[in-house]
Structures are given as structure tokens and as C-alpha cells.
Image (tube, rainbow, N blue to C red; front, side, top):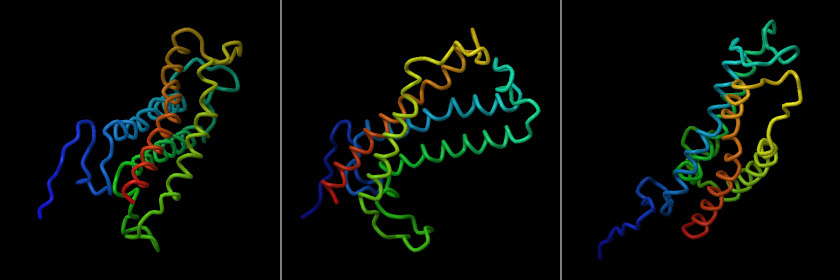
Length: 180
């Protein structure tokens, strides 16, 4: 008896190494998490590098030697955390890569991915939801006018990060329950 591959619209096949098919929307949502964190990271780096972003007084990073290294590390860390959501739609979210000490090649227990991803999505929603209600423009040190619009445009994608991660986590949990 031979196996027949059935193509279902909107679902990626398991040929990429996952145990079951990954819905196309879940793959796109996992990739979108990377784009959610990127604009704010770029804005922070440019601000710390001396871009006149509209802050005044104590918020101005000029004269502090650690501002640029700090925001670079913060931005790289944010992107690295966002990158982990791809593990929920890739093979390395089901099998530890060989280079991981003690765990390499072993199966990832679903709870080891689902619990941190769920907690992360809740934390992101709690952290970034206040942005939906706007920035505190009453603070005289915050940017105003076009500079405020640019800052908001860079930070508002963070609102989507938590819900996207939650959706991808649910898709991962359903797929792992169904296909092991």
C-alpha cells in the first residue's frame, strides 16, 4: 500500500518535519510576531544613537554611555523572544535541535512549549494593551506632533504580539494533541 499526499487548502503539509500539518494562518501569525517587535526595536536604537525623537530632559539619552548598548541588547532580546514563536510551527518546536546539551534529538514535551508560550502571550497582552488607550501626552517630556505619531507607529504593532502568540500556541496545542 502506498501513501497518498492530500493537499488541503490553507494548510501546509507535514513535509517540513512537523508531526502534523501546520495551518497556513498559524505559520503567518508566527512570522508576524517577528515583525511586531521589529519597529519598536529600530526606533529605540535610533533614539539611543542620537536621533532627535522629541524627548526632553531626563528622557534624553545624550550623555549616557550605556543607553545605546542597553537598547541594542533589549531590541535583540525582544527579537529573539519573538523568534521562539516560530518553534511552534517548525520542527524544532517538536524535537530539540542536536546542538542543545542533554536534550538534543529528544522530543519536546508539548507542555514545555505550551506553558511558556501561554504565559508569554498573557504577559505581552498585559504589558502592551495600555498602548491601545494612547500614550500619556500630558507628560511634557514625551514627543509631540509628528515625532509622537512616529513613536506610536513603531510601538503599536506590539499590541498584536500577544494575541498572535496566543493563537499560534493554541494551534500548536491542537496539532500536538492530534498528531503527538
